[in-house]
Amino acid sequence: MTDPVSMPSMTDPPFAAPPDIVLDLPAPPSVNRTRRVDWKGKKQIMAFANVADAYVLAARGRTNSPLKLVKVPRFELIITLSEQHTKIDLDNGLKALIDYLRRIELIEDDSPKHMRKLTVEWGRAPFGCRVTIKPLPATIGDVLRRAEARG
Image (tube, rainbow, N blue to C red; front, side, top):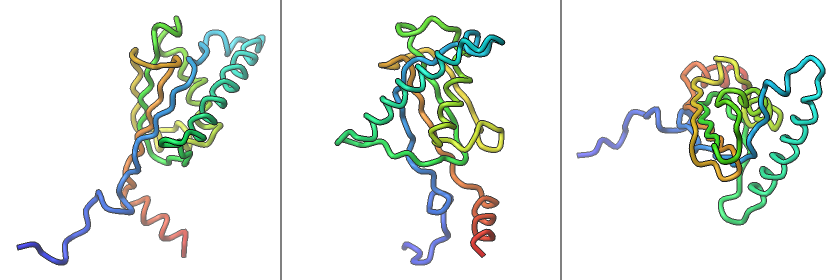
């Protein structure tokens, strides 16, 4: 017999996490080139951001499963780089990539409060880099703070 009044689950709203967000982007530039004192790397960062913006715009405009950009407060990142598209060390593109995700307001920021896990790997990334943002369920504290803020 099913109990008509059941206890709420952590998989029910407002605790349930939204689906993963997957972005296919160009391979990011290496931090070794972009963070030099002479700041010549700014051109590389701007070139990466311009191409990435075009990819995001195309993903938002596609008719089948258009990308919806929603700022994710707590998340895990899975970053997959293609060895066929870039020769940078696996960790060297993270700064430009994470800063880009903040700039387009897809993630809150990369502090431990928000980014709970980071996985970086070589694998299939059609344009050079695939980013999977896995939103995490809200904590009870998050829900209480939001309720308090509403008054």
